[in-house]
Image (cartoon, rainbow, N blue to C red; front, side, top):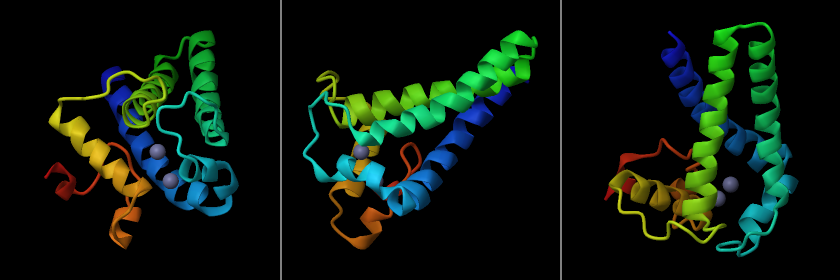
Length: 146
Ligand SMILES: [Zn+2]
Ligand SMILES: [Zn+2]
């Protein structure tokens, strides 16, 4: 049950990230996401306004974990853990591997990671209008595997 809750909240976060990226970051909070698209940020460890979104996701996760710990509620702890795990995965794949903010893991060999890189690359440097629609990180159209 606990493992299932962690996995469910992890994958639910991909949906949250996708919808937030599509409707909020490319919508009314574009002012905070803009610098992530505008500047040539590859390989630079500078802070972006866009990093503010990490805080937005961290707050509910921290509240869930603290509440879970204080009331001995493993369900809340599992949900908070799933969100945190997603945030960590997102940071590693999106910020470290793709945008090279820490200048490590430059040539991932894994086929899935390579496909993620192509898919997110299509969002940053779209070749057509369907490329730009690619707002998710871990889930994307199958064509990026080729
Ligand atoms: Zn974007
Ligand atoms: Zn990006």
